[in-house]
Amino acid sequence: MTYIVLEKCIKCKYTDCVEVCPVDCFHEGPNMLAIDPEECIDCSLCVPECPVNAIVAEDDVPAGQENMLELNRELAAQWPEIVERKDPPVDADDWKETDGKLKYLER
Image 1 (cartoon, rainbow, N blue to C red):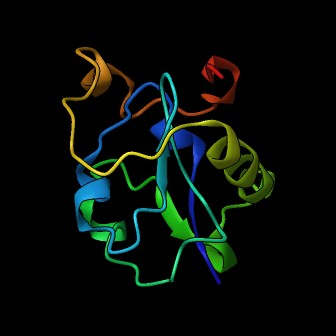
Image 2: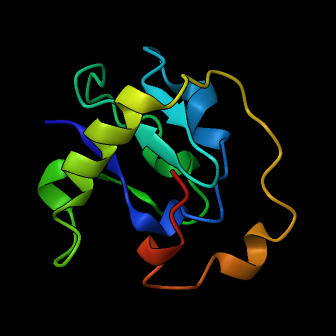
């Protein structure tokens, strides 16, 4: 089992989760993070660190977001690794409660 970043992360991109990851499996894109499912060791340390609850176990992916496992795999292969916390986008709080953000994903 691996953990997955859901579309809730898009346009929020809080990076609190990356500091607690013991294997550095997070990758940073323009407006979202992704987890490399091949590197994730299923420790779950990142889950409580996410202020928008955008990280879940692959067995707990909400209905309609099943594509996020493959998307995390694809994006993690393309994006650089991130290992230190960064400031979120200035408008991140404005996007916290927004659903259906996949259309805003920047690759």
